[in-house]
Amino acid sequence: MLSDVTQTTESAARDDDRQAVPAAPAGRSRRRVHRAWIVAVVTFVTIIGGAAFNSLPGLLIDPLHTEFGWSRGEIGLAVSIDMALYGLTAPFAAALMDRFGIRRVVVVALSAVAAGALASVWMTASWQLMIYWGLLVGLGTGSMALAFSATVTNRWFVARRGLVTGILTAAGASGQLVFLPLCAWIVEEHGWRPASVTVALAALVVVPFVWLLMRDHPADVGVAPYGGTYVEKPAPARGAARRTVRVLFDAARTGPFWLLAGTFAICGASTNGLIRTHFVPSAHDHGMPITAAASLLAVIGVFDIIGTVFSGWLTDRFDARRLLAVYYALRGVSLLFLPMLMASAVHPPMVFFIVFYGLDWVATVPPTLALCREQYGEDSAIVFGWVLASHQVGAAMVAFLGGVARDVFGSYDMVWYAAGALCAMAALMALVIRRVREPSGAAAGLG
Image 1 (spheres, rainbow, N blue to C red):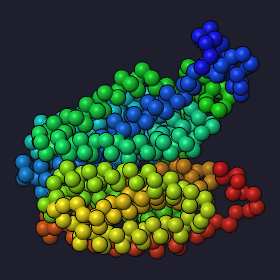
Image 2 (cartoon, rainbow, N blue to C red; image 1 turned 90 degrees about the vertical axis):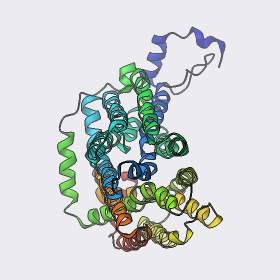
Image 3 (cartoon, rainbow, N blue to C red; image 1 turned 180 degrees about the horizontal axis):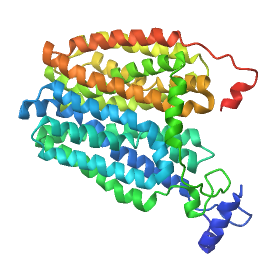
Image 4 (tube, rainbow, N blue to C red; image 1 turned 120 degrees about the vertical axis):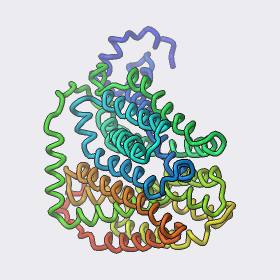
């Protein structure tokens, strides 16, 4: 950076942003880092802080069962309420941010997550677990779902939107990679309460970070979106929630919506509801230490990022329906073998399963989103929000039923087999989604 940058006044920088000058004049350097990148970093850190709680439930099923005598079904019900509310809140989160602003919604959401995690330290009854973990944390994390990163990307970026979307999507997996081993170690060495406090503090630490550095719109600081031209901040949107509901009713009259929602519900059932919630206690049933099982689960987050990016590349080149069918079929086969892989120590076949499952974890998102875009055009983002809600409802059902099955049968084997059969059903459902024959040149218009 040249020395004369220090002579650039704040007003000149604002004028440059308003005019969206494509290149710096001769003799002057490029401006400092665009404010949009700062907002993107804040968003990334916020998603990691909010995702800390997602690392916790699977680690606490056994400790809560041991201390309070609650059945795994009761504990699973609290997790299922959290997951269902996460999904059902997500379609409305963007409307809330349009009405009240990103910063206010996110601060309230982080506070709700922190309050739920912290209050659970003093709980004595299972209904309190459902209020703290289910209601408070579910509403909080749901308000920071994909709608949060999508809203930030759409407002602050014109160029590099794909890159930013990919980075922010990876934030959840990054949070899992950071917090799963940490929380597992805390639970094993110090008990579940310090782990819950750690999650609450992770959310609270981010609050001042968001309040001081996050802004709702580029116009709030007098700059243009990155790669775009300056626009005035629009008035708070009204009626967005009504549109969200209207789009749901319109889409629900079509067959592809139910097929997409059904396949994505099975996706949620076989990932968040099953593996994220029940893998650690299932491995622990076979004698594997909690820290080892949690570390395996964290590795899934690494390959999750690779698999999602590669799936996006494939979606640009192949039929999205066939990709979904292949993903679900392979996932189902792997789940059928999982009971035979469980052991007291980590071994190569289990590592292979973890790598494979990580690659397939959210590989279903790009083709599902592409099919929503193909079927529903300008309403595709809202339709995908509702399809995402079905993902979380499916996850919620299996989080609960998986715990009940463990109570009834004494092991998780039946759960893995049932999930494998569901994935086979999802593969068939994906293949029967009808194609939309677009007129020449229409594909380019969908963007």
